[in-house]
Image (cartoon, rainbow, N blue to C red):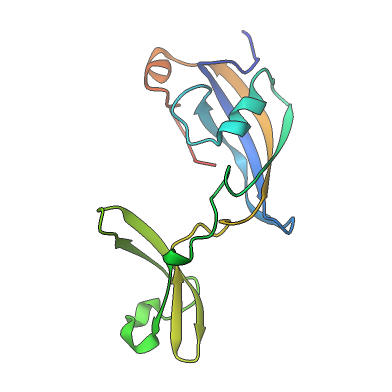
Length: 160
């Protein structure tokens, strides 16, 4: 079996995401799967850099905000009187969903409570930051017919 990453291979990998300060923002030591060249949400540069790699190979990819989580959009940050907010949302880290005029569901997180004001932010926490991904290939196999046709790996899948 060819264990080199090419189109229509299912790749299992672990990863770390480091923020602009070099701190680990997210990591997994349980492998996640994707179909190489398929319909994953893997950042394009990461997938490109994994091409031709094999089990045990590591890839380090640094992405600018434009290539990763975008610039911080101040239009997605809102502040309101704390009394106007339901009690269950009156803590930093609380999350809520809201629908915009286009019908898109947006995720917001309470980021600050100060002077009887509460601020929520709909930006990704890494928006506006240059981030680094450290990815290690754990397994490579041929995609099944269904995986190749759908572009989606069976089993555990996670977006990075």
